[in-house]
Image 1 (cartoon, rainbow, N blue to C red):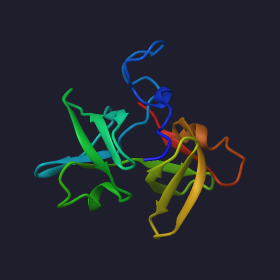
Image 2: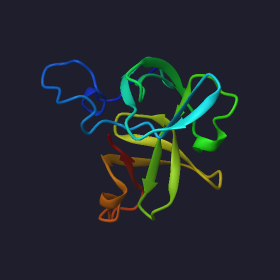
Image 3: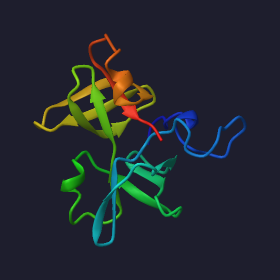
Length: 140
C-alpha cells in the first residue's frame, strides 16, 4: 500500500482529533447499490488500501469503498465506489486517482493525468494559490 494519508486529513479517533468531519477530505459523490449520490457531508474516515477507503456517508453509515477518478455521473455500474474532486491551480476540475501523503495523482475531465501537491480547502481558497502544479481538495 505504501505510505498512508496523514490521519489529520481524515476523521479518525486519535488524540487531538477535532470534531467529526471538520477540515477532512470531502467525498464528492458515492455509489452504493442502485444510485449515485452527490454529497456535501460525506468524508473519508480511514484508509484500507491504496484505493480502498472507509467513508462516512450522508445517512451516518460507513462503508468501505473504492476511489475512482471519474466525475460523479460516471460512477454508474460501480458498486461501493466514490470520487473526490480537486481544483487545480488554473481552476480546472480534476478527480483524484490516488492519494499520496503530500501529493495526488489526478485525472482531468479531458483525460490528462498529472501529479500535484495539494492542500485542504474550498474552491474559494484555490484562487489564492499561485504555485504551479498545486491543487485544493474540498473539505467537510
